[in-house]
Image 1 (cartoon, rainbow, N blue to C red):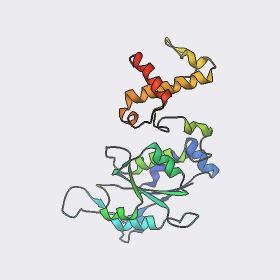
Image 2: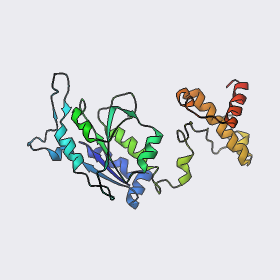
Image 3: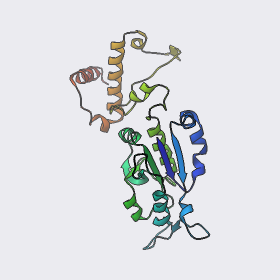
Image 4: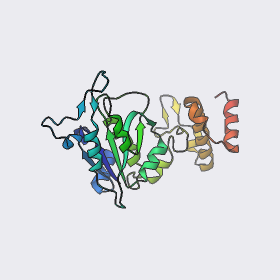
Length: 245
């Protein structure tokens, strides 16, 4: 899969893309990440990409010309047509696991990073989608782009060492992940639940589903409200209710 990042600060991504599984996937050719700087599409000697907002106000706004021309310079996808363009902005739709899964199926993805007080409104006519990490404001879109890139790239076949890892974790099925344990068997007086040491795979699966339901209901009620519960789930919830959980 090909990623392109449109950013004024490509140097921020250096160590991020060299470390861990992302670095290995890039070295192996499973992923590629390119950078395009809007400053390369300016015509003045100061390479100006921002200007004061019309109507007054604090801060500066990114001009539309350099950003749009930077996006238009991106290579077409192998099948033809433009690369899918995502603008990272606090005004965008909250980024969720389902979005990562959808974007991972694309052949090429461009992540467009704003800066300053934001981008000229006319830039929005040239992107396919707007995404946000949440209801807060960053100095620019680069950190958000890293998050979207990593969440998406790890779902590309060949990036994770264990392909099953991506299918059994928080948010994949609308649930938070069940509790995980490893050695030692007991740590500071807290033992690993006996069911996980039983070797009974059906019992383990049932325990994990039960704990995922309990954790989601307690920690993320808004996610829990969206779940489609089957008969087995309702039985597990009744058990939790009887235990006062």
